[in-house]
Image (cartoon, rainbow, N blue to C red; front, side, top):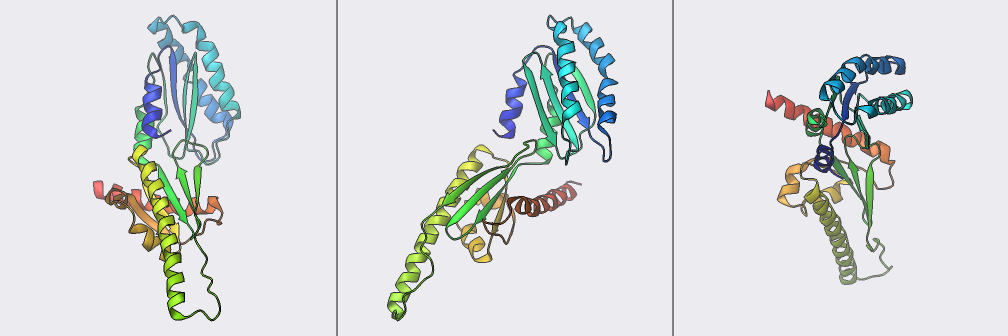
Length: 262
């Protein structure tokens, strides 16, 4: 599910709803950020009474659900928590960016801080390519786990029979390159399909230099605009390390864009 779909779905919910954006400061203890939430409970209860909403009786249950979550949530690598809770709703997002503290109760969710965080930190995909296999890794703000898709192709290896004449050798190499080209075309088609449902996505290529250049030529003009960098890698490389390298490229890209806007 992409960012627009998440926000659109949440915007259709109604009833007595709590929207909580809770920044997690470096070194802050669990007790401290739970106390921060509890300090806003009086205001939330007051607002709920003013709404005179028929579901007000569920408020204590909703608050308790949030408290239980805060008592156990793992905030490692999290700079803010976005929590949306109601009678039939409980969704949380761990954000790697800081969002100002907000606690609001209303009949509609407060979604603008979440939308802004998504806009300022767009999703990106890493296309990791080897000669016979590729992996498309999606990294999306707010999603605790990355998603990936593996693409395999039958590309002959660069093995030539001993004593093969020049013409035969040339034909074999041409045959291998044709298979490789079809493999890269298949990968490019998958990237294009992904981009059609994630229009704001950024693209990074992780492959050996030869494959990077070949793959770039197969991208549509729209995807070439979204390509923000590349680095050397293989599909067998540790995925976490690959994502970290890609994240540095994304951070540098966003930093440059921010400077241009000043």
